[in-house]
Length: 428
Image (cartoon, rainbow, N blue to C red; front, side):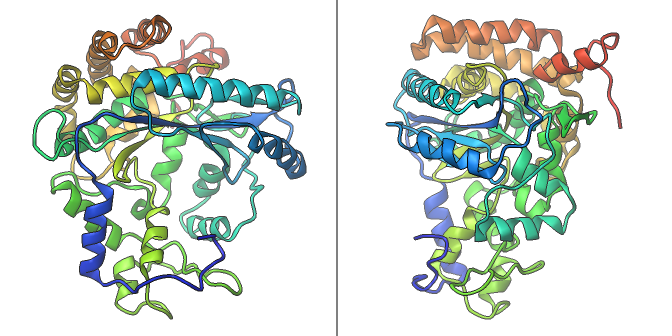
């Protein structure tokens, strides 16, 4: 159904029905076996990255891209960022091969339009500027503005590497869905720190290694936060969906309503002019942006976009190995389990652990120790996935260049700004 087609919204839903639907569709268990990746990129001129791009110019480039025979889905973010979303792949090698081929085609086509892709967690050059004018983004902007300016920067100036993995077995164990859900939220802080790559926003240094993660922390916690981890995952997520704020009430005529503080549960109980339907529930699920989003599979959303043509390979390979290899998964869980005490009762990303990961990266000794153990386990596991030598070498190079030295990609940019600080300057 298109954004504007709100005349056939389906059956009305009750609270018990919502809980049952969410439990059924958001955690589909079984043997872990498929992997996917979603890559967001900043688009700019190669020699004039500070130049704002006219919407018409971006439109022309994206028309050409949509004519390509890509295997990945191509979408555009509100600020003109490009996103490529792979199909679920049966192996890590298949996922890497398909995305590499699509990126080669996209980069070639963009060069014909005088444009390139850059991997940064936030646009380091230009202020946020929305180029997409659609009811969804009008409503999202109005909703996020209530919490301050971070929402617009998140919409228009951020980019990520999102790794998608199966939810896991129904049964307990290293590959069980309960363990993988907990691992994702604790390991997530380590991934934030290790791959932090956004120390700049709109032409200035922010003092954070991952400014992108800072932006997520500063928007409405009901929209960007995780549910409590101590509860059973399906029950916790179902309650979270019901109690999360409604972004919009869609309509066929006029602007969509943007209610202030209305939860989906309150909407069911009569908090809006019309009751919600199954279609409204499906749409509501797409407006929640926690660091780990269950969509049948697990979508890990906390990793900054990475620099270089193949920088994205490393977080994809490391994360897949740590989740889908039983030995590596057990090693990773033992390495990150002590971090739970430091996280405290607040959900990610609004707790001290995630805040420190975004602010100082692997300069934090505890995060560095956990990251070293996890990357070592991933390197040991990758040969069992049959990936090529190039992928293994990329992970090894990243581990030695950054992880074992307590550094992250953001430190390279900070070294250029503060040559005598070795990337360790932290501003409040």
